[in-house]
Length: 205
Image (cartoon, rainbow, N blue to C red; front, side):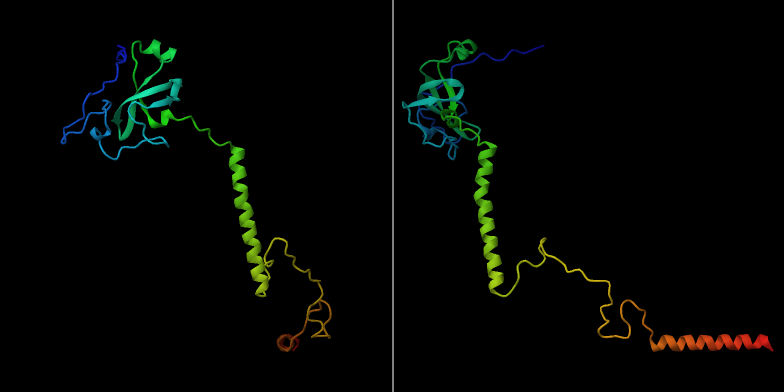
């Protein structure tokens, strides 16, 4: 079973101030003064809260020019009950006979367009330029202290070494890649030859 939505009702405005100091005034009920409302309510517009009887423009859903009739609160926000000069046609069909409406501060302001991605990217360019400028300053400070800031950078080059023996100047008797002979190796070779001769002599007899 589908339950129909409740019929729209004219917002209720209390003619006097809420005087009960124990129980807060109910939500969505209009009052002629903000003294009746809870403290620390949030007004969501950038401009000041309009006075009762002042003229405002309701940008939400094209309600247009209106007069402030009362204040109300809901879910921690402060709002105003307004009477538009003329209700939009779509609202007349939806809520015939209703002449007042609840509106919050943000609904009385023109919609602010969201910055385009290109504009956001352009805003990031000055920051990148600033980082580049700081990097240049650090490099200059390193150079002033005798440090080379280019060390370990991608554009560094490593010299290529030839295949020649790097120690050939120190050991001229072993030029190029010639294998060196060390005294320890000569002793080991001589000992091995002596043991081999001894072993062969046993079979010759």
